[in-house]
Amino acid sequence: MTRHLAAKTSDIPPGGNKVVSIGGRDIVIFHVNGEFFALLNRCPHAGAEMCRGDVVGEVSSERPGEYHFDGSRRFVVCPWHGWEFDLRTGQSWCDPNSTRARQFRVTVEPGETLVKGPYVAETFPVSLEEDYLVIDLTAPATT
Image: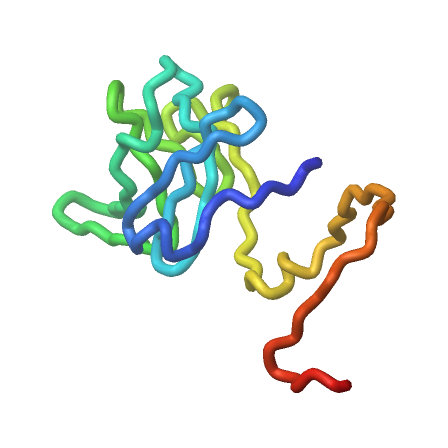
């Protein structure tokens, strides 16, 4: 199965993250400005836990003393060596041509659609070997 129920949206507060184990992999889900992003919880550079890294926006500058913050571009910073990885793509900004964090697609789906299935219950044949007496306390006895 390629799709897995990972967490409730309410499990991860805005600005927070949650590590889930799926198929033997630890995956960290980040909640940033109402969006959810998932990366393998290991930095591809040296193996640090990505869940311990800070999430930052992009800062650019065209000249000294002038800075522009782009909050729509979000990165997680590796807590060990400061390497930055784009939350949307996993691309490294320290080594963009050969290093990328494993990224997973995350969708938000209403619980009511997940409950519909398709589920298949295992069934077993049932037989009764005796008769039973049933007393109904709400109905008067008839003679």
